Length: 316
Ligand SMILES: Cc1cc2nc3c(=O)[nH]c(=O)nc-3n(C[C@H](O)[C@H](O)[C@H](O)COP(=O)(O)O)c2cc1C
Image (cartoon, rainbow, N blue to C red; front, side, top):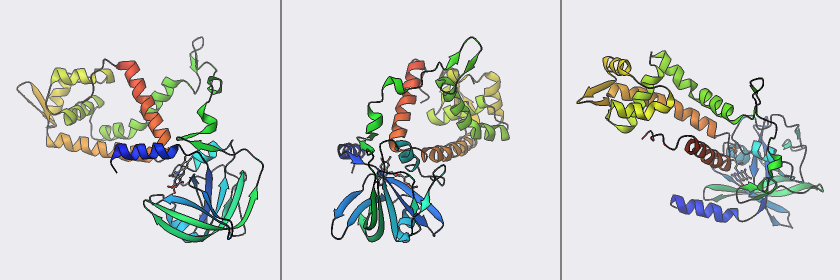
């Protein structure tokens, strides 16, 4: 399926409003495992069977395939944070959760709208998912409103009013303090923390930030005039000057010919090594977010970039 079609397919499926569950099991009878799943459904009354499906790429797949059973917790409307906690691949999903064990030894969450304790009866291949069918050996219902998921959002968050957003002033100009919802502080702190490994790696080989930015601009664009490089890097505050160009040339990381600057193989190797570091961190960070959180973050950051510098030349 081509990319646009896959997105359209996902959007169309999102029109089907579902509840949300957390399905738990045990790995090696020692490690609690849980995932958020909206694919839960009823199958049969007699015998009592239910199903849910798990992506083959899920880290927890082997645990569900081997454990012989699972507990399905249908979430209540106030549990969207817990749903997000179990929707991120992580080794600490149960952190802060006061969980216990059922008599099969599988994790039991303290709160739910309904609980179905199951023995795994069948596992079917379903494309990129495995469908688990469980025989319900015990169940419980609490009279709580359910958490509803529709079109990639929780129904309780969909019409969140402005009054739900933090209202206290984020910056106090009288005494120069700011609170932890000051957006610009959060953006710059995230920038410093995420760029720290590469800046450190640069320092370790005696490369300044201006030198690294210059190399990376050349790696992306090919040969450029010095003025073009400066224009592309002006907004970073790390603008290469004559001394920096000379230094990079002396280190054989760039070549200057007919007023055009180009990167050497040695320079490109440095950029590729640093890029690999950034890519690893990028993947590590993304694992902590749901696809909807990620696409929201990407459009948010792109909008901030547009609002604050639409006249700044693109890096490439
Ligand atoms: C509301 C919601 C419903 C989800 N439903 C499913 C599902 O039915 N099947 C699935 O494989 N993943 C589903 N996910 C994504 C998984 O919860 C997520 O990929 C999880 O990180 C997998 O955990 P693991 O990689 O630690 O095993 C859902 C996520 C959300 C937010």
